[in-house]
Image 1 (cartoon, rainbow, N blue to C red):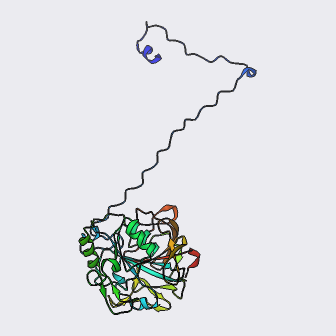
Image 2 (image 1 turned 90 degrees about the horizontal axis):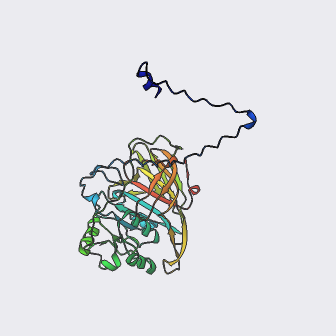
Length: 361
């Protein structure tokens, strides 16, 4: 107002005097009221939108595929024998996108489940029965399970309680000549699966095969926050089934040994080489499920929860935790919940009871 009045020039009304404070004796001062802080909620930042994966890059290997339509279909999980006889007859493991190894049967041995998604495989084996951990792994990836039998309790769960397709050679192909193949007479090594056989069963059953789930994160360059070097990894599985992985710079990956014997795959006429070895610790619980005529009890491994993690790639080790749910595949998280990127290629997931059980150097 003072500025407006001054602009009117002489002859205008006199300006209103500026009010001044009347001094108050010090003894009469009262404390000023404490200002009330306004609690303004801090907006939660939106998580960054992940970069869309190119349509021709496989979600679980990070490698290009020859047919992008293949990775839009259900991943195929195959239960594979891993006792001494089974290991000597392994076939087709190198064509899997990833392979799980886990403890079964009263903590007495391990079994494998291989997941095929970005490549076809005309022979996979030897196929054996399903176990409790198959429920969690197939459910969270949204795949289809192929196996040969299982205990009554596991078969009931697979047929009636889970939400994914379940192909059982003993039930769906007892002659083993439509979806599976028989080679020999030894029950431990004879049964073989193939990816086109599983897809034929899905078609015969009229089961939709469209698939869309998040994949892993990959980078050719190693992450910067390695916890140290790791060129030899030792995993003390029970029953003489201890695993060792040895990093080979020439092959740019880890060579697999079990029971002191190097593992080869006749399907490629070469050794098994993993780009990533992922060791995840998970809760193991003995169940009341009887798995065989000896009364051996099954093991429930909670693969749909969380736990400690070590990732090995490029001769380095990365520490962190894993998170999973029944609806989505696991995530591999380092410090600050930042994803640990994998090296493009095949990954082996070694499930253990405690991270402290393993050693590396």
